[in-house]
Structures are given as C-alpha cells and as structure tokens.
Amino acid sequence: MTAAKITARDVSVYYGEKQALESVSIDIATEHVTAFIGPSGCGKSTFLRCFNRMNDTIIGARCTGRIELDGEDIYGAEMDVVQLRARVGMVFQKPNPFPKSIYENVAYGPRIHGLAMDKTELDRIVELALTRAGLWDEVKDRLSESGTSLSGGQQQRLCIARAIAVDPEVILMDEPCSALDPIATAKIEDLINQLRGRYAIVIVTHNMQQAARVSQRTAFFHLGKLIEFGETSELFTNPRAEKTKDYITGRYG
Amino acid sequence: MTEHTVRAFDQDIRALRALIADMGGRAEAAVNGAMDALVTQDHERALAIVGGDQKIDALEAEVEKLVVRIIALRAPMADDLREVIAALKIAGTLERIGDYAKSVAKRVPKLSGGQRFEALALFPAMTTVVVEMVHDVLDAFIARDADKAVDVWKRDKTVDDFHNSIFRALLTFMMENPQSIGSAAHLLFIAKNLERVGDHATNIAEMVYYAATGTNLGERERGNGTATA
Ligand SMILES: Nc1ncnc2c1ncn2[C@@H]1O[C@H](COP(=O)(O)OP(=O)(O)O)[C@@H](O)[C@H]1O
Ligand SMILES: [Mg+2]
View 1 (cartoon, helix red, strand yellow):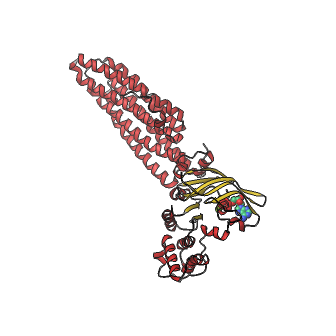
View 2: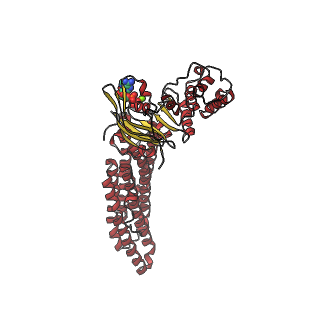
View 3: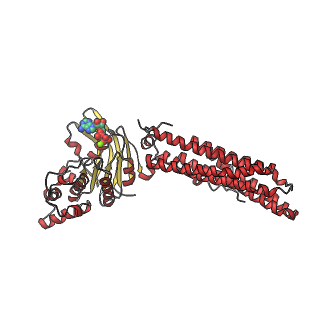
C-alpha cells in the first residue's frame, strides 16, 4: 500500500441549489499520476478545485465532506489558504503567464512566500524550476523578455515552472494541453513523466489516449459521481463499470 | 451492443468480423474437403484444396491491414481493443488451420495403394468434431459469447481421445503389416494434423473468452488435466 497524499471522503459540491459533485471519495498518492476523465460537465474541474480550495473564490459554491492533505483537514480553521495553494499548485487549460518577464513569472511565488534569502538563492530557485519544467535551455538567454512572448507550449511549461518554484507537494492540471499543438502536448506529457513521483500530480483531460499515456491511476466521473477508479492500464483494457466502458469506447451519448 | 458515436468505427468492426467469418468458412471447408478427398481418393479435389489455401493467406493479410488501420485511426479501447487484437490473432490461427488442411490434402495421392485401414473409419468422425469446433468458436467470436467459447474449449479432450485411438490402432496395424508402414505413417501425420486443428480451435476459444470478458480462460479453467498424445 502507498500512503495517500490527499484523502477525499464524501465530497459534495453545490453551486447554489445545483449539486455538481455527489459524495466522492478518493485517495491520491504521490507515486502515481492520477487522471480524471469523463464527459464535460461531469464535475472533474469542480472536484480538482476542491483540493486547493479554489471553489472558495466562486460565489455560491459550497463544499461538504472532508479533504485531507497529509492528514490535515484542508477546510479546517487552522488551514492557511495562501499556504495551501503553495502546497497544492494549479496549472490551467489556457496558459496564463503574468505580463512580466520570464524570470519574474517564476520568481514571484518564491519571493512572496519568502523562500529565498537573497538574489543568488532566488536565481537558483528560478533556474531549478525552469530546468524541472524542461524550459531552461530554451529561455536562459532571454529571462528578461516577457512571459507572453513565448509560444503556447512554452507558456504552459512556464506556468508549470511557476507552480514548481514554490516547492509544492501536489500539482493539479486542468486540461493543460487542450490549447496546445501535438508537439507542445508531447513535451508536456514528457514533462509530467519527469515530474512523476516528486509531486502528486492530478491531471484532468478529455483526451483518453493522454490519460492512458501519462497516468497510472484513472478516475472516471459521470454526472457528478465517481463511477470507477483504478489502475489506468486495467481501466482502459478491462473497465468494470458499463458506463466507463461506453465512455472510453466512444459509445457515449 | 450500442453503436459507436463515430459510425465508421462500427463499419470497420463489421468488416473485420466479416473477414474472419469468410476465413473461417474457407478453413472449415478446406479441412472437410481434404478429408473427403482422402476417403474418396479424389486427387483433383485434393489439388483444389492445396490451391485454395492462397486465398486464406490473402484474407489473413487483409485482416492484418484492417486491424492496423483500426488501431491507427480509431485507437480502440476496452472490449473494442480486445476484440481487434483477438481478430488479428484468430486470423493468424485460421491461416495455420488452412495449412493443416493443405498438408492433409497433399498426402491424399500417397495413400492410393488400395490398402484398407480399419482406423480410417475414425477420421471422418474426428474431422466433424474439429470442424465443428472451428465453426462454433467463430460464432462465439462474432457474438462475443464467452460461454460458447468455454464449451468449445472443453471439446479439445474429445479430439485428443480420437487422436489417441487412431494412434494406437495404426501402431498395431503397422506391427502386423510391416509392408504398409509407409501409408500408415502418412495417416499418423494426418491424425496429428487434425489434432492440431482442434488445438488451434481451443486457442481461439481462449482468445474469444479474453476478448469477451477481459480475463484469461486458461488461468481460470486450466489444471483439470488435458490429455496429450
Ligand atoms: N462557477 C459555476 N457556477 C455554476 N455552475 C457551475 C460552475 N462551474 C461549474 N458548474 C457546473 O457544475 C457542473 C460540473 O462542471 P465542471 O466541474 O466544470 O465539469 P468538467 O470539468 O467535468 O467539465 C456542470 O454542470 C457545470 O455547469
Ligand atoms: Mg473542466
């Protein structure tokens, strides 16, 4: 057995009257990349946003149940949300670099979290994060250029570097490749592979081949419910639930 | 079975099943025909069966092409993936069955000595059993019917019993009639070929079972002893 990094129990989410997630329980381990798949609107993003309390920022959104990060209740009174979002980083569908230099994009987080004592240490953190994000060689000579001057795929890796820079434990990715071309997508997938085991990674994807390629555990959601969760290779070759089978074989809807 | 959202995918799957059914029909006919040619000493028919094997080989190549196309274009998953892979393996196995029929047909002229073999009476019955196995296991494949596959799988024992009887009968005959050892040896090979057809039908049953259920039949049912000759 592998110890869970995140434990979610009976998590339900409501947007006003509407229930978007129904009593979902799952364990997320650091050694695996976990993929969330399912038809749009089934609650993948909603669930992902619970893990770093991003739903708090949505007016009318309400979350019940319990989510623990290393055994700590993330909705508990002692939990510092800013701290939580550093520990549980997020990468979005559209790359969203700040309109600042490449260097600043990465240095911003470590600076506000006071992770560097001086410029030398900050430089080192920036270089390490960009290296881990597989971007260092491409940008090391243009660190002062704007982050928005990079290509889409590079911008997405910059966002991953930004998440990595604050030394997170978990990285959440919500359809990180859906705005990217196949080559840029392959680079992100390769990167996810490199990062596996260092961070607990959860990726939402509507591309099943991608889920099959990058993850070791896959969760299939349907209408706000977790239908099936298990080993990726098993789920894609021999799903247990009829709903999972219909979805992954393209018999949905 | 619910249709796929992409309907061209269903067409591909249907085309694949049709190819397998065609191959299976030809393999069955070849085994039956080779046995008929043997019993009736019809050399022309035997030659036709040897020639017809090319068509089975060509169909196997067609299955291979279609499977590669389906995998490349449709990226099948779950039971679809298992079925497509099974189809590829089944086509290879049917091609081998065709080869056994050809090998039987090639021996037909070698047995024209007019010698009467008692054991010969067992051959058509054995042929009926193995051809039915091939027929039923392909039905099971098309219908994704795991129970039917298990049923075929269990019949392999009967084939082995036939083979053992023929083997013993021919051996006795050879000892008593040393002058007919040559012909009897050909019959031994023919019996072995039929037995191999049964083995291949059994292998297909395992492929069909896996395609239908996602679990291995061998792991589940093996160990209750299959006879070997
Ligand atoms: N901010 C929001 N306000 C109201 N409803 C929302 C909001 N975000 C998502 N929903 C609804 O919640 C359900 C799940 O959405 P979402 O988590 O975005 O699904 P997915 O990521 O699987 O496509 C959908 O029915 C969606 O319309
Ligand atoms: Mg979403």
